[in-house]
Structures are given as C-alpha cells and as structure tokens.
Length: 298
Image (tube, rainbow, N blue to C red; front, top):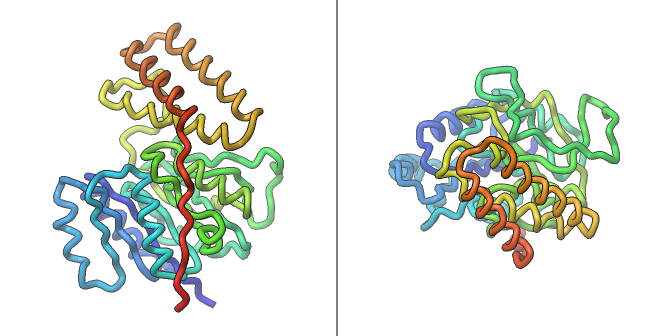
C-alpha cells in the first residue's frame, strides 16, 4: 500500500534556493501527496512567486504575518498539514535542502513503526557530512541494525520524516524556541515515545555557505552573535526537561564555554559573553507549553 506523504517546507528570504528545493521534491521517484510551503514573512519576492502555486492542488502556501523563526514556521506548517490529513508521514525540510531523487523512496523503505527517520545530510555537492545536521546517536544502543539503520536520540529538520502517530502523541514543535534546538527537542520528544532511526541511503544536500556547526567561540560575524541567545536558552530548557543529571551537565558545559571564550583567540568576546549569559539566565525561566493538535476524521 502506497504511503501518503505531506512535505512541510519552511522558507525565509532564500527564493532561489526555495525554487531548487521545490524542484527537488517534485523530482522524487516516489511522489509526495502535498507540499505545504511556509513563508516566514520573506521580503525578497517569495510571496509573489508563490502566488504561481495558488491554483495547484499539490501545494498549500501559508504566508506568515511575521518571521516566527524556524521553530514557529515548522510548528505552523505541521499544524496545517496535520489538520489537512491524515497523511501517513510528514517530511520536514528547510528551503536550502535539496533531496536526491530517491531520498524519500529510501526513507519509506523502512518497514518500522518509527516516529522519526533522519536522512543522510551531505554538504552541498560533496561527500562531506553536513556537520550541523549529524544526528545524535542513541548511546544505549550502538550496534547496527538490519538494512543499515542506526538508532538515534535526535535529528535535524533538514530532512526528517515523522509519522502521523508522532504528532498525535507528541504534539507540535515548540514555536517559542524561535531558532536552534527546536529540531533536537522535537525529535527527541518523539523518540522518547517512539523509535528514531538514521537512514544512510536517504541522501539530501544542505546548501549552507560553509560546513560548520553552531560555534559561538569561532563565530566571525558580529551580526549573528545575538542568535546564540536562543541556542543557550533552548539547550538549558532541554536539559531541565531531561532531569537533574542533564541539567548539571549543561551547567558544566556552560561554565566551560565561558572559560573558552575568555582564554581563546576570538573576536567580539564581550558581546559573546553577554549573549550567552543572558540566554542562560532566560533559560531558567523559559517554560513554553507543548501545543497538542487534533485531527478531523475524513
């Protein structure tokens, strides 16, 4: 029986990449049922371009009135797609994600009642793994399973396939995260209830300018430093959710980060220190609620 898949694609001011991403989805050897495009209040002509899809029943375009960040965009997109369903699966991706033609086919080959399936994310047109999108392995289970699947504890929104049951049980991503950590929290929340697997044969290509992770110590762009507020706040939220041991580990990592910023050669040290301290403080009082959603019977 063919599985029905809805794509949730979030975009912000990257129209040319969005066009390529849409074409990559439409070029899948296993067709998707519907593509939900969430325009995060882009100002580069994206909204006007997407008007060309308004009469195409394969698409549903949602233009947000403000930029809600990746977290808000994916939350809005999954809410809309789930409400339009039920679909068997929801394929989540950013606008700079270019799936190989058989990426979805290889995800759907997995005959498991998993909550999360993560693709193999490579950097651009190389064989290098995209550093920021490496799934976290399940430390309790490190052996390789059948069909080259690996159990994971979390993954990124750069090609994540989740089941309808996952949303039914676990709700939506936390929109208040805004950016960074929303995919880790959401995928881990699902995997705690259901299984999660990394699927190496499902290849997508992440079109980032550089192949680096989230690293405030070596961040050269002063304009990006404020983003690390969300990284620090959200990491502490996840640690608190996971209990005392995780919280203590997070506190030690935070102190280590402060020391590293102080002693290593780095630009904008004072701004970096202020940003992470502010984010960490906010994390102690950050208590967003998980939004649950219902689905109409059809």
